[in-house]
Image (cartoon, rainbow, N blue to C red):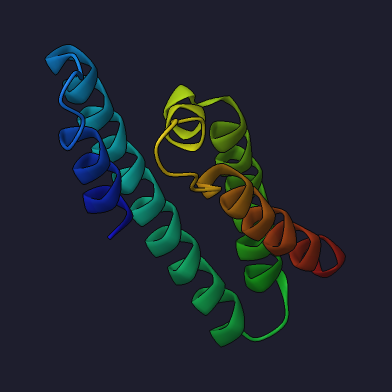
Length: 114
């Protein structure tokens, strides 16, 4: 839905440069792919933590999930596509701050378990 809304806003602009529309479309598609990957991977890993009994195997999954969460957080903070989408002049999204907030909460919940 977000992807379609952003692209639709740009397409409705009569004076928009086709190169800009192409750049925005590519950025939105890449962003959507990143968010989907983050969501699916972390969801699977959190399920693994929940389903694993306490012990070394669970601690290893928690450690791996914490590291991955931190890596995703760094990606969100540094990826220009997140900034491009959030800073567009047509439709404020807040995708970057929302994604950062979720990842920070996940990380905060995992750290005491490690």
